[in-house]
Amino acid sequence: VDLRNKQNQRFIPTTPDNTNMSDIDDKPTPVESGEPSEWKKYSSYHIKTDPDQDDKASEIRLCSFARPHMRAFHCAWWCFFIAFFIWFAIAPLLSEIRDDIGITKQDVWTSSIVGVGGTILMRFVMGPMCDKYGARVLFMLILCFASIPTACTGFVNSATGLAILRLFIGVAGATFVPCQYWSSRMFTKEVVGTANALCGGWGNLGGGVTQLVMGSALFPLFKVFFDGDSEKAWRTVCVVPAIVAMASGIMVYRISDDAPKGNYDEMKKHGTMPEVSAAASFRSGALNLNTWVLFIQYACCFGVELTMNNAAALYFKDEFGQSTESAAAIASIFGWMNLFARGLGGFASDKANAKMGMRGRIWVQTIFLALEGALVLVFAQTGSLGAAIAVMVFFSLNVQAAEGATYGIVPYVDPASTGSISGIVGAGGNTGAVCFGLGFRQLSYEKAFNIMGYSILASALMSVFINIKGHAGLFWGKDDVVQKATLTVPAQEEEIEA
Image (cartoon, rainbow, N blue to C red; front, side, top):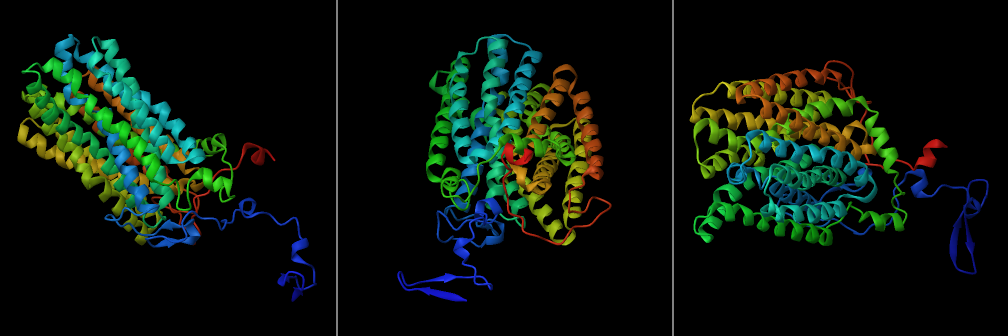
């Protein structure tokens, strides 16, 4: 029944018992009830979206740069690419640095271990920070900070100085978490595996590009500038990526959005998004067993990639007598596979999910891990340069496909704590790099690669322990009926205690 209010000529809705609905003052607000608010930064989108999944995009248009979805997609992979570039810009120059400042192989590996190990804590922190502040502002802060020690590479004169420098540069590696969080925030569950994999893979590509650009292009060019003085060349060349990193961080902050409906500060101001408890988010993610299984498995794929980024150029120079420039070019092949390999893993995960549900995603990840482990063992026994390069190509393909498949699973573990879980699993990659790096520091290349291979095979077997609520496991269980998959945010501490 509608009663006309003659004073202001509007309709006042009533309930069947003629109770004025405007008198019902205990109705929860949209934010309190978990329902989406009407406020949006954009009235329409240039891409297909799903309103039941918080206006996330249900398709990926790679050639589009439209806000907010595809702009965030391209900003995410570009920021991670630049972060990876400065993180490993020094790697192809390590043999020159080692000879010029008189340090040992163990000193070089210590710096490499510190460079990836220092990122572990930052990745743990970045997860709940993403849930609270969004990815955009964190990208800016990390890139601007890490660009400063990158530019200071030329001041290194000792093993201790090298380790400290790489510790601070390693902060750039934490950008992986906002990269994956941002793409998960922008794309629906049907395509999030592919979106995450492409963003992560194209970002990881920076590890291969930096080998080629720094070791085979800029370093020789700077040597020409300094009349063949290689020491002056490596002491100045890192200023270039430092400038690009700082400029990228500032630019992305100004031209992109945190979520489909706008930036987090705007959404909180208009009631679209409640205030987030970072502690609650982290606790929820850390208490989930699936998080730690994926932590170990990611240690055995992304941890392997980080180790190879540090080891490949040295390996081909020491074992096959290649020059610095040639070894860097060969080592870059490993990273260049990210152009499509990680995306392939995410795409395969999405396709398997469409046919078999979560069981399909887990099987895809398990198969890639098993192939990766087997090929590492083959690589360790390969004695010729040509064969080593060929095996490395397929080894790299499976490493990065396994990474993509892993992050096809992550958004399902606990959607409300996706940021924290992404951070914890991402930290697993750095943890693996530290462990494998210690092996390369103390052992021969062959023994270190053998340990790596068997560890990867063991991690593949751990897939039987992945048991996500509402989804099928590797051998048992079944997926529940598909429901809305809006990425929510964890409640405040006091709400939980109440």
